[in-house]
Length: 553
Image (cartoon, rainbow, N blue to C red; front, side, top):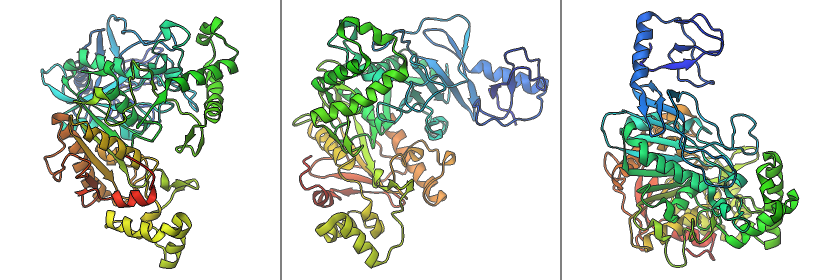
C-alpha cells in the first residue's frame, strides 16, 4: 500500500516506474522510506497512486528562513533529513547562517556527518545539518520539541549512527517534534587555538557553537514544523548527555532550550568536569609541533588533510596526558579525550562547581541517570551475562577475585540495593566510571536549589551502555533486546512516556508512570526502570561507599 509522501530516488535509467527517468534520477513511489539500506521494491504505480503521492509531497513543503524544503510522509509523520542549519567555511571558527536558496531543497537523504576515525564515506567538515520528525507542519500547533544529541563522546558518532535514533515512533506516540543534529567533532570541534589569533577565540568549543547554532535555527524555524520554540528539551546519551551538560553550562545557550535529559552522560573527566584551559593549550602545542606548524604559519592548519590532523591529535592526546599525569578511567590509561574546554567565557565553569552546579543551568529541569551495568559487561569480544547461572562456589570465588575482602559486604549491599537482580549481577555493577560521577552531578544540581532534578537507574535485562536508547525512543521494533520482547515493549511504552511528559511539562509524571519525586541529597529519590519500575531512596548509597570509599559527591 502506498502512503502519501512515500518518495525515494531510483538509480539512473530505471524505467519500470510511473514516468520516465532521466540520466540522473527519477522520483518513484514505493512502500519504503528513502534509505539506501532499507528499500522495498514493488510494482509500477498507477496514475491515481502517483497523483496521491504527489499530493502528499506537496503537503510536506515547509518554508524556512533560508528557503523551501521538501520532506516526505511516513506513517503519518512528516520527515525531513539533512536540512542545513549553518555553514562552516573555515576550520576552528563558528559556522555562519545558511545562505538562502531558490526553488525547493529536497530533504529526503541524511546529511554529511563530521569526519572521524573509521569513516571514509558520508563525512564532510561542513556537517551542520539536522533531521526532523513531526506529526504536522504549517498547522499552527505548538508541540514540545525534543532535540537528540548523539553519543560517541565528542570524537565520534552521528545523528544516524544507530537505527534506534529514528524519531518517527517517538514523534507519533507523543505528538512531539523530534530533531537530531550533526556537528563538528574531535579536533575539528575542540582544538584550542585561542592563544594564536582572535578569530579562533571559540575554537576549543566550536563543536558546541554548532549545537547552539542548531538550537538557534530551531528557535527561528520550528514553528513551521509544528513545534513550540518556547518548549525545547535537549536529550542525549553518553557523549550526547555530556553535550547537554555543556549546554547547561554555557550562557550562550541560555534561552535556546528549557529542559535537559542526560542518559549515561558523565564520567569524572567528561561531564562532571571538562578540560581546563592550560591543559587544552598544552595539547595544542604538542599537536602543532607534530605537524611542524608554528604561530607564524598557524593558518596552515586550514590546509592539513584531516587524516594527518587526526593522526597527530591521537598521538598528542596520549603524550599530553602522560606529561601532565592525567589518567582517564574510561580508557583505563593515560589519555586526554576531546571535549569542551572551560575557557571562562563560552564554558565559564565545569558543570559541577565546588559547592553547586553551573549557574546557567539553574532554571533548567533535568532528568539524569545511568544503567546498572554500563561498560562492565563489555569484554572478551561480546557481552558478559549478569544472569549467568553460577554455583555458590563459583560465584563466591568470582566475587572474592573481584572485590577481595569486601566480597561479602558488596554482595549484601547489592542485594539490598537491587533485590530483583540476580546474585551474579553484583559482579557487573557500575560504580566509579559513570554511576558515581552521575550521582555527583545529580546531588550538586539538587543542592543548587533551582529547577528540579530527577534521578534514575536503568536495570532491565543486560543494562549495558546504550541499552536504554530504544526504550526512550519507543523503538524496540528497530533493534534486538537482551530479554523478553513483550516485557521490553511494556517498559518502552512507560519510559518513552516519561520522557514525553517531561518534554511537555518539565515533570515526568503522569500517563502510567509511577510517582517519580525529584532528587534531593537527603531523600535520594531514584526511579528504577525495570519490569517492576518504582522509586527507591538512596538505594545504593551503602553499595557505592563500599565500592569507592574515597569518592566524594
